[in-house]
Length: 300
Image (cartoon, rainbow, N blue to C red):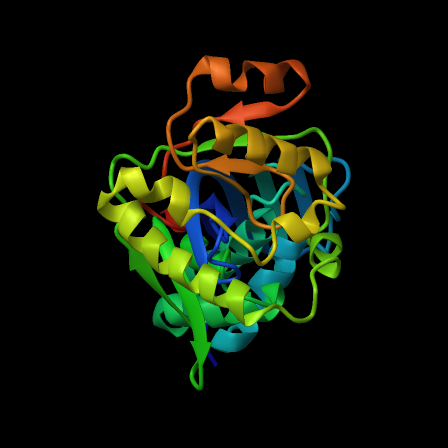
């Protein structure tokens, strides 16, 4: 059996935005909005303290997502379970399509890596596989682990991911509306089948986006066009789609962030473009691309 090498660890884990328009369930990017997770193994009962987003509404015991992820990772590594004291400072808005659940899962898995004596048992490939079991698909987990922009896929060996090159012209702006939207609700309105024409369109735009992210800012607008999921979700996020349309008419590469309802713009925006949204209660972030994924920053 593996053993615990330390009893405290701190992890930082970034927000993520999945899909990026055409790359449904495949492309993602890490954003410089970071949650802090402090974990201490104890002989007592498990307790979670949450500040920031979700404070007062999230579970404070064994049902907390970070706790569940730590336990899954310890089981995988063959390490003993213990009582857990967690302090989670959440900067990532919840229920807004910015990967808050993936951040919690990945943060918990990486925290377990920092606790065990054999961290190689929880390498990045293993963390991606375990996170995908929680999330159902790897598009948010991949950039939360690897940082930068990523493409994720699955084969006979399970979920896999690779980083993509991102040029300095990619300067994300995130527009966050007041209301939340559950991922399950956003997925429930998608059609079970799509046309060959729309599938071909998105495949081409996804390939173009890889080039646009790296070295062709002039291609970001056409490269972020989508036919598979954004318009189909208008019934549950009508205002977000109006924002996307308005910004794209201004020449800005705007997309729905993940399952929504936040809007991601993959280019720098000026105050005039976002001032009206702020007046209507939207929050505006200019976080930059997070070059690093989840990482252990302290631990005794």
